[in-house]
Length: 367
Ligand code: GN1
Ligand code: MG
Image (cartoon, rainbow, N blue to C red; front, top):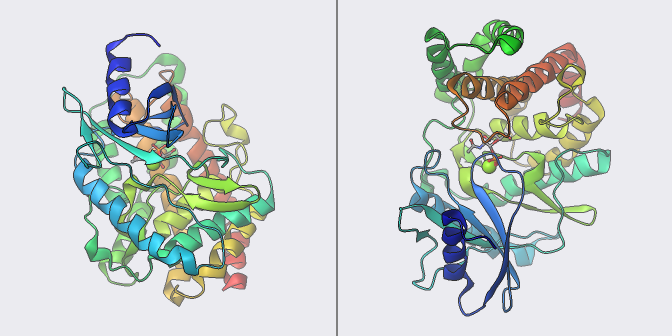
């Protein structure tokens, strides 16, 4: 292992959470856009665990975040013995001082979670069975938390999934007239026109929330497909609980659908070919509603299709804003990556809109 300052910090963090076990190896894990994630192998018990450096720019309250995670993990774990399906929640590991967080000398916050061995996460779904399992996992997660009072959780990310706020930030960025790379200018202008024509949609869910038309529940906040772990054919866990907070489950189901029903995935370079797969959508909804029918109100059904549009638009404009601001929020491997991600979400939304009638019929038939 090299001795860069970075590796010295993550080695120190790993030792804090490893307890008496000797750390054998540390390697990067997963494809998250925000936090730095590592898999730690030890010579003792646990043999593996997941170590994460929390991105302080995105998550200003790591303590509140860990308190939320501990609360919902305890709540779910208490129900697991009575469930008639397999469900798992990564355990929060504690430092030698019994804290769920470790601070480096420079103040970075680190945490560790147990590693669910022999599980798989997919960046893209290919079969209806996978899609149904993904939908079921999200429905189960919501059902498991449906009796927990949302007011018991802290909103550690106040502007997160408040689409009008992302729109306002985006418009501010545009007003500053950021310089554009000539080779990307046409793509930016295309996205800008596409988003501009849909600005009013950004208000749909928040207005419904403010009017009390849609109830506040506990949401995951980021149920994209690679946050769902499979053990064999079954989806057994929804990981990445950083964004769990009180909110509209519409953001969750919309986010899950936009991610699960895009067979090319959100990192494709082939954005013009991106389309929304109706069969996968049907399977996700069947899986979800098997649970959701017990708690969804009729009005909540009415907002499912709008939610799919809003969340896809929201992510498109978040990626575009970040590109225009110089890629400070979402990690990127090359300068235009966030622009390409924005194009992908816009094309996905275009495909959703051309299939509006069919998607709405599906939702109506499954109600
Ligand atoms: C971010 O870090 P990651 O990949 O789990 C983002 C989500 C986006 C997602 C898109 C806190 O999630 O909102 O939907 O990228 N998380 C945050 O891939 O902003
Ligand atoms: Mg996340």
